[in-house]
Length: 51
Image 1 (spheres, rainbow, N blue to C red):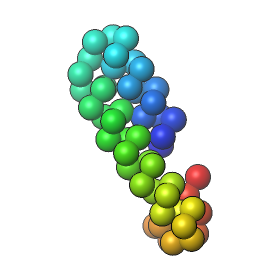
Image 2 (cartoon, rainbow, N blue to C red):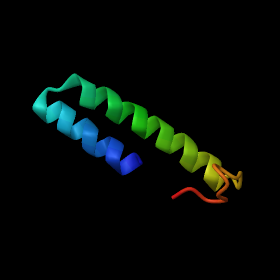
Image 3 (cartoon, rainbow, N blue to C red):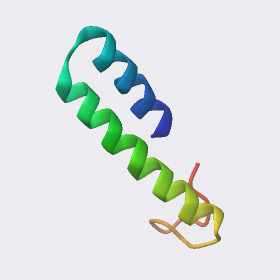
Image 4 (cartoon, one colour):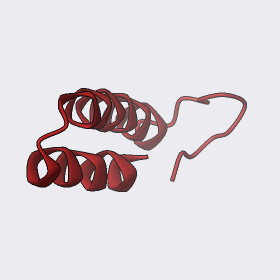
């Protein structure tokens, strides 16, 4: 999810499409939160680790 967010950020910046930029930021933030929760040992969505 983080990688997809970064790809959308780059595409939105290069193509000057603001909706891609916004969606990219949202995906990066959500991915980072899930990654941190998963690395702390908390079950996220029924999974012990979130990759």
